[in-house]
Length: 155
Image (cartoon, rainbow, N blue to C red; front, side, top):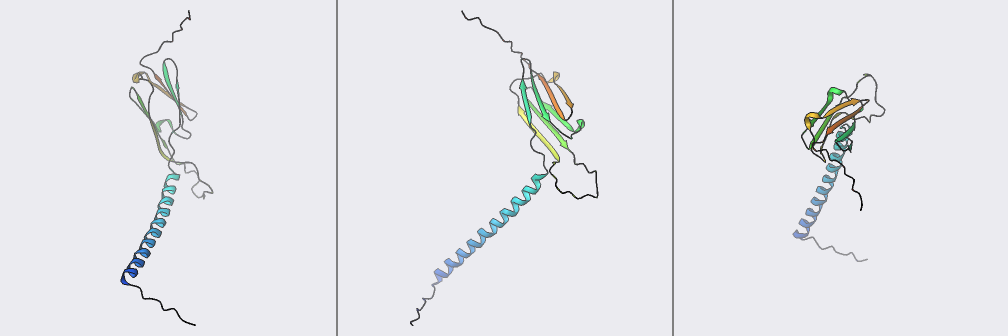
């Protein structure tokens, strides 16, 4: 049997192989770092309350906003108004009732949640009212201009 003689690698080929190996190692390390980063972000995000959900309704003379805030105390709600925007924030406090218990599952979120939105009509800020009942915040915002409906008779 004849043995095939391998041609020695040139300096250029050696450097190319080293560069390829270096790039593969860098990509592998970056993927591992990305997985670790995503894991840390997911752990952090698990405990942050989601964006507040709002129902926005309009009547002839007002805009009414309802927001569910279960477990929030009235004094932990903040509402800021301008004639065309509303901002609602609430603090969801963690309850520590049983100190020597281990959680089997923990899904409730704690922290501050905030929602800002542009209103469809200008409102009279000084006449706005808010009430909080059974975990539901209801904000009534009287409109600046009350639009009157007119019925036209078809001739």
